[in-house]
Length: 102
Image 1 (spheres, rainbow, N blue to C red):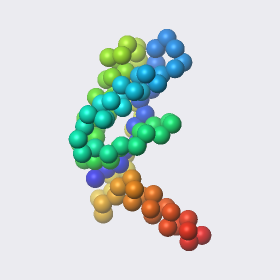
Image 2: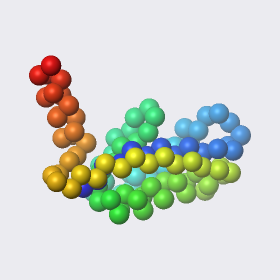
Image 3: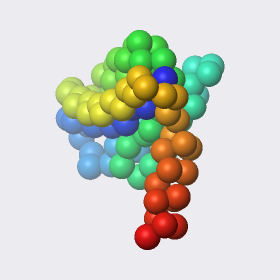
């Protein structure tokens, strides 16, 4: 299972506000089954099969153009751990354990 961080940044929208564009990208996520996601103020964290996630990122990227943006920059960070299963919650729990020890 992979965890990715994705941020779709529409450019050429005519306004400094882009939340309506981001909402369209999030709607793509909400339609997917078996895809867990977490919204943050700066990006979205998603976990699932890497191939499925990369296809999903492409769909999210395309929503900016479908909504009228003239340009889109999408940033992706991939955490693909192969030695053991890693999830968003397991990563946080590990961090909390280490914080408690210090």
